[in-house]
Image (cartoon, rainbow, N blue to C red):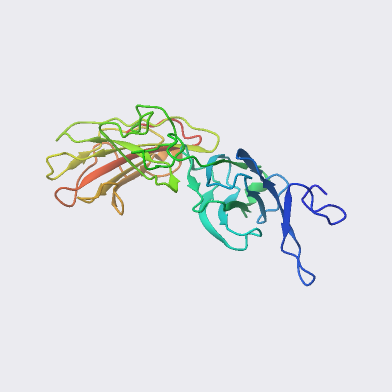
Length: 310
C-alpha cells in the first residue's frame, strides 16, 4: 500500500488508477491534487532509471489552470504537461515539455490550460543517465487557478503590455505590467510565459556592459540587450573585453523583426577556463551583413560557473 493501490487492490484515497483490464496490465496510480493552488515535487530517489512517475492536478473549482516550473536540480528527465478533457485523461494533449536539467532558467517557463474545467496530468519520464543513481534530484512545480490580468503571474493578459513573472520595476516590465522606456519585452501570451525584457540602445555609437551573476541550485542567469541605432546604416560591433565564465552570444537580427526570431549567429563563445574553447577574443569585430540589421547580445552563466561580464 501507499502507492495508490492498496494491499487488497482497492484504490487509496486521493489517487486514481488506470491501465489494467482482465487481459493486460498493470494499473498505474497517480496522486490527485484538488486544491486551487499548491506545489508538487518529484524526487528521483527510489525511482527506476528510465521509468516514470505522475500526478493529477484537478482543482474542485474547475476553472483555468496555470502551471510554473519553480526549480530543478540535476538532470532527472523530462516533465510532460498534459491537458486532459475527460475523467480518465484518455483525451489529452501535450501543452508543454519541461527539461529538468541543471540549465533551468532563472525565470521558469509557465503554461495555462486552454479550456475551462480541463485538468492537468504531470508525468516525469525519468532520465536514463547513469549519474542519476548517484545524484538524487528533484523538480518542483507550482500550480494555481488562473485569474485574468494578475500582474506578475507570467501570462500577458488583455490589460497588460508585458508580464515577466514578477512585480518589480526597473527590469523592463514595471510593477503594473507596462513596458518601461528603452526596453523590448517578448515571449509571453495568454497561454504561455513569461516575457523576457531586454534593454534597447538606439544611439549611433556607444558601449555597454552586461554582467551576469553567480547562480546555484540548478539555475542559470541570462541578460540581454538590443543594439539598434535609430538612424539605421551598417552596424558594426567590437568586443572590448569579457571575463570567465559566461556563455556569450551576439545574434544578428533582420530589419523589421521586433523579437529577433530566426536570426543568424555572429559570435559565440565560452571561456577556455571553463573547459570549453572560446571562439572570440577581445578585439574581435564584425559588421552586420545587411544595412539596417541590428544585434542582440546575451550573456549567460550556468550553475557553478561564477560571474561573468562582456
